[in-house]
Image (cartoon, rainbow, N blue to C red; front, side, top):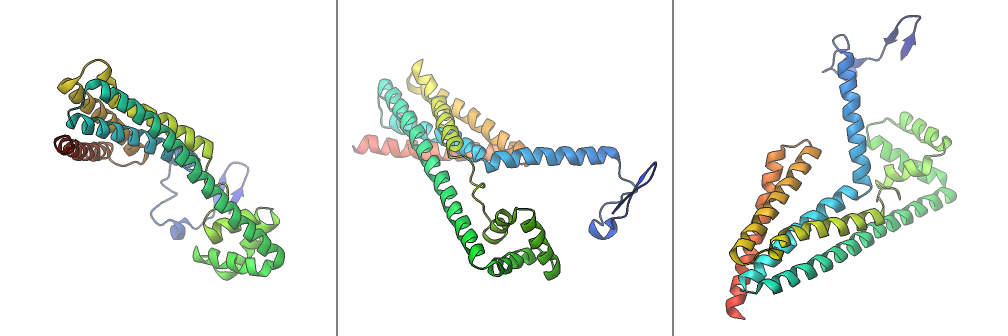
Length: 269
């Protein structure tokens, strides 16, 4: 509880019990501002994650890099001419980008439709028997550590505030119709970033060919993979260099396997 006087505010919350690691006597305003900044950043990230943009973007650019580099190396391993490599790479870019966009749209749209169906079932259950819904709601809240009395009071307050069905859906089912993000955002992110990623290993083949083009494709894709991995590391507060290296190793392994298979196919076909 906060008591406001003429010149000061007194916080009577029992922080020694709620947060024994934190001492309000030694806390500073800088600590509070740093905490607010961290929460603001996390909220913005959560909005992007909930919208599906980050997942679709990362998946799109990474798939574009790996798919086209692997395809190029596989075709080169089969001793194909540079013109065929360029045409194959461009067709792979277009087909992959459209496929990714269609897949993301269908996936996110289907997820939202399923969540909407669950929400409809919840609302029908509420019309038929509010006590049945309250019982499930209470059970879910108690799973978060609330006692029966507190859970009951929470149910009543959120219902009276008009947000009962939404909160109940999240507590009982773990999802709401708003959790899936935008199908259009996910589709466009995948389309554009798969195209960007797939174009990177293809660039050298418009200017050179042979070993030089292969090396440049690998170098450019490796650099882009390091950049993607480093970005993900920074976004997740993990070691950026380890995440970048992990991304590079995954691309290198997939590319080496594809090149080897292409070389075998070139001698067998």
